Structures are given as C-alpha cells and as structure tokens.
Image (cartoon, rainbow, N blue to C red; front, side, top):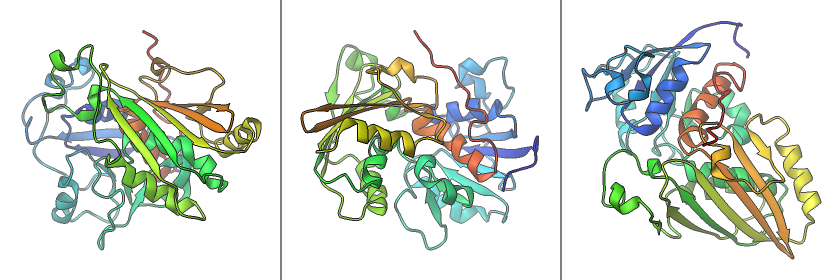
Length: 329
C-alpha cells in the first residue's frame, strides 16, 4: 500500500563506520520521507560521524553511539558476516520495525525465526513490498543477475556462462590487508577467488528460482582493480537467438525499472559512479551473446539498493532519495 504523501519514518544504522554504511548515512539523510535517528558503531562510539565520513562536515552533527534503539521504523544492519544473525536474536524488535541487512547472513540461508526476502527490486518487487526482513544482495551478484535475469526468465539460458568482473578497492571494505595498501593496489590488477566467489551462491540461488530447468554452469573470474569504486562485469554465453529478439525481451522486462538502462553505447564505469543505475550493453558475435553490466558497487551494489528496497517496503516512490548524478571526472 502506498504511504501518505509526506509521511515521515525513522531509521537507525547499525555498523556505521564502513564504506557502504557511509553511503547509507548520506542517502538516508537526504531522503524526503526518512529521518536518521542514530548511527551505531562499537569501534567509533563517542566520535562524530564526520570523523570517519569527512565529506559530511557541515551536513550532520550526529555522533556514533554504542546503543541500539529497536523502536525505529527501519533498522539497517551494515555489519560484518555473522554479526547480523546474532544481533537480531538479542534485540526483541517491536512488531512494526523492519530490517534491511546489508551483510550476507540471510541472502540464501533459511532462518526458522526470520523470513528474509532476497532484495533484488527488479526481480522481487512484490515480495519486497510485503516483507518485514530484506537481505540486500551482494555487489557482484547484483551486476551479474541484472545482466542474466531477463534471459533466464524466458528460459533461454541453456549454455554455460563465462564471467569476468572487476571491482574497485572499496568492495573489500575498510580493514587493511596486503591487497588493499596503496603501494600494492596502485598500477596493479589481480584475480581472486576464481570459480568460487561467495556471490555465486546468490546468483545460482536466484536463477534457480526463476528457471524451469537446472542452472547451467556459471564460470566466474573476479578481479581487483586499481580504482576505488565500481564494477564492470563482462558475461558471454552461446545462443541462437537474434540480438533484436534478445533486446526486445530486455526492454520489456525492465520497462518499469527506473534504474536499469539498456544502452547501444559500449559503457564505461564513470557513467554509473555515484548513481543507483545499472547500464547493460548487449552484442552478438556469431552465436555468442556478450553482456556488459556496470554498477557503482557502493550504491546500486549496496546502499542505494537498500534505499530502493526501503522505498518499496514503505510504499514510497521507487526513486525517492535516489535521483543522483554520475561523477563525470
């Protein structure tokens, strides 16, 4: 049910010190229907939010807290893997409080207590709008699924899919490791978790719910890029269908999806950075279909998608708080 025009809701963020949480703070703050009540962080308790997210100097006077008020209308969980499930058991949430989890704890892990819906708005809009608990998808999974779902929905995905995708350093979070230091990352590129990245579980699970036959093998090679944000995924698979027929299916599937754009221009990452957009580019070479999918990993791949899910849950405009402009340079 749509909410009353101008109605206000309250939100709290748990685990507010990370990159995705920083974007979430920014987006909730500018949302016309939500007020950000608090940002919780054990590691930063007592410090100004601007001490971590410095671009918000002059925009907020919030201070990180270690207390959690479960009585807000919506709780965002932006913690590390394994923490969300433990926290929910301890909170005793009021019946009206809804939850969006940005970790991987509930994406495809059945829970006897909580019925989480997989929060890919372009595929699960009706279920999301009726849900109390949402599992926000992973960034790689978002880029891959948006590229494949229209093809899978028509039961045309028959052959193995080969994927190479590169992500910026923010995809690994703020905690330093050998592969996140500037000296290592600069002018460098590397492959990690080939064929076994954790987001493949989401991709196979979601495609399995859509398709009328077994999901074909998906061969995924993820890469670390020497830039800060964004994902460019390149996918190819065999098909006898014409490009014009495939494009018609994609345009029809995404006709009511305000953030998905099918372009006839070979896209680059700067076209989506700082937006909730996904750009899709399709091309045929003989019997091979190429799909390029690009997103901002911190927005469409995390915080922006969470806001999109929030809008659906509370009956708001799909684009509320998400009319963001790309950074050209």
